[in-house]
Each structure stands twice: as structure tokens, then as C-alpha cells.
Image 1 (cartoon, rainbow, N blue to C red):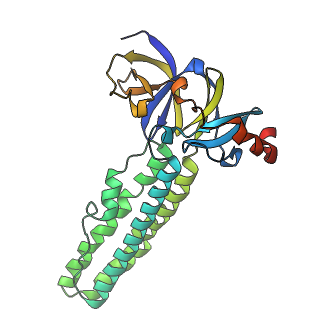
Image 2 (image 1 turned 180 degrees about the vertical axis):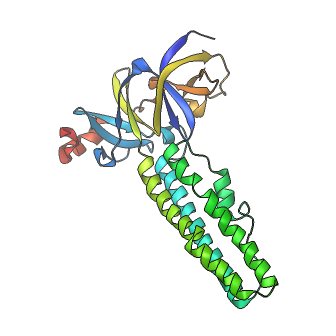
Image 3 (image 1 turned 30 degrees about the vertical axis):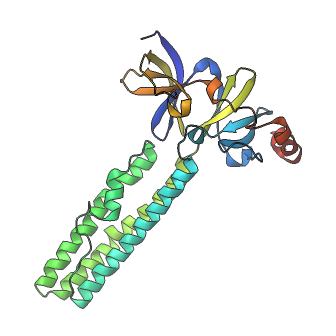
Length: 281
């Protein structure tokens, strides 16, 4: 194990990464309207941006490392949540129809076995604001599914009006609360996932990379752990470090991450700087 060094730690898809502090010039909140796309650039080149009037390439670090983009991850999560919201609208409609028509209810009564329950139980998020919203789903979701057992019991005893009263109570209580939470989840998702641009200095090049969140500046101990034959993720992980809590960190080198020859050129960016206000920001 080597001596400890100081690193900027950040996360991509819940995995911690690090770059040496001496390679980091600054970090800025990333705004989509500050990025200008570059024609014919590599897929992981998000575009060019201006930081303190200096124009530089912006590398989508998730794509550079072979991970799904944050935008794609958010899109999938929102689409999944919308599908699970519709599932529960269909579920409560079917429960009401069964109570009204005095017929068997066949949808899931176990909150862990419905599609939302399986998705919810498997979902892991590092954003504490989003985690707080998700936690709120647990109680109303369980109450909604428990109501099905009440309805089934009342129908078995031929107490149709009591069964309908349960449905009405749930629609105006836990179900309404859960529908509001789906809306809160969507808005929080959009607001919470705002990337950070980390401006790096490599040999003869300054560029920025995206990070889901910057976590800290701290010392980590570099480990003599073997990487795979290609040198970690897409050959871009230089070393492995260990935090004080023993969490392993993928150490990246600005030299490895920098946009390669042909990825983005002055010829491709010059027309954009003339036609866009980016050069004056």
C-alpha cells in the first residue's frame, strides 16, 4: 500500500470515483443551456462549454466509462414510475369493480409481489432527497394492498356495502396519497439529478467531465489490487483506492480520460463559437 494522497471523490451510478486534487481546476454546476453540441464528435463528447470565458470539451463520464447516461437513467426511472402508477390505478379500479359486482379479486394482495413492490424493493438511490420521497411510499402502499383482504373478507360474508366502503376509504386516503407521491417523485427526480462539471487539467489540455455528485475531498490509500487485462472500466481506471470506511474507489487519470485526437477538434468547434453566445459567457 502506498502513502495516502488527496483526491476529489465523486459518484457515477452510485460507484465512487476519484481524481487527484492537483488535476482539478474547479467544479461548477452544469446547466444544459450552457452546452453546445459538436457535430461528428465521439458519442461521449457532450459538447463544448465555457468556464470563465475558456471554451473546453465536456466529456460525459458515464458514457466514457461504458455506463448509461444520467439522462437515460432518469428517463427509464420516470417511465417505470409512470407504469407503476398506472398499475395501481388499474388495481384500485379492479378492486372497486369486484366489490360492486361481487366477484373474485385476482390481483396481488401482497405489496411485495406487485410490479411496484418488486421495483420499489430493488431500487437503490444515493440522493437523500429522493430517498426521503421514496420512503413515503411504503405505508400507503401497504395499506392499499391490505384493503384488498378486507374487501375479499366482506364479499365472502356477503357484505357488499361494507366492501364498497373500504374501497371508497382507500381511494380517498392511501391511494390518493400514493398518487400524489408519484407526482412528487417525478418532480424531485428532475430537480435532484443535476450534474456537476469537474474541470480537469491534463497535459496540454483543459476539459470538463460530468459527475452525478461530488462527495468530498479526502485522503485515500492506493491499493495494489489487480485490474482486469484492459485496466479497469474500458481501460480508463488507473488504480484502486480505499476510503477510511473501507469502500473501494476507482481512481481515474485525467490523461486517460481526456478527449482523444479526432474526438473534438478546433475545426469542429470554431463555427459553433461564432454562432453561439457560449464564447462570451
